[in-house]
Length: 212
Image (cartoon, rainbow, N blue to C red; front, side, top):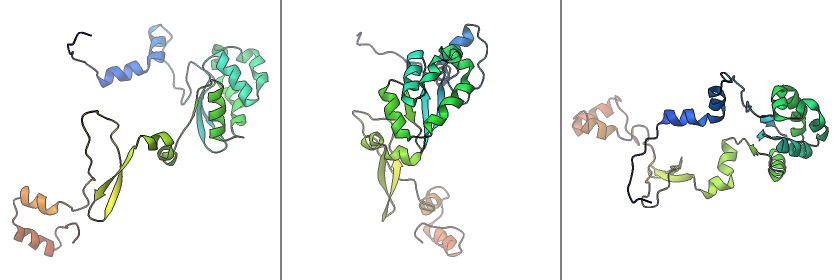
């Protein structure tokens, strides 16, 4: 602790490049340009998106222990005895064959079942939420990510809370303006029209004013 501040240079470009560290390092070590793998992790298998009985999951067994646990939970134990799936490197090469064998097992149970079972076995796994599931999530509700703000005289509008929470500053919120809410102000302050001119335009139907 020096008690002195310093300038922090954090560019979005730098962060984007650094985010790809596991792929970038391979490239820098001479392994060539990574190819597209869709939702799959190119350096681990099985990994990717799988379908459950009621939705979708992301599952990643990144090492042999996790693969062993995955097979136990899915009830496909014999797969771990096969030579073509004995190591992660071998499983990456046989990714399509491996996924074809394990994905049917996921479709017999719900996402919640697999999430609980696999996480309990130490296998990274999580559900893919749609918007409804996102805003029904207990933690999202606990964090109060949705707030209600007044719009007009008789209604409120649900909007997203800022993701930034500051200890000594409270963010204020307001609803976006309704259609034609500020017609009078814009014409008066920016166009320099008198109230009589605005009323004339309103009577001719040339402009609209909210509530009229």
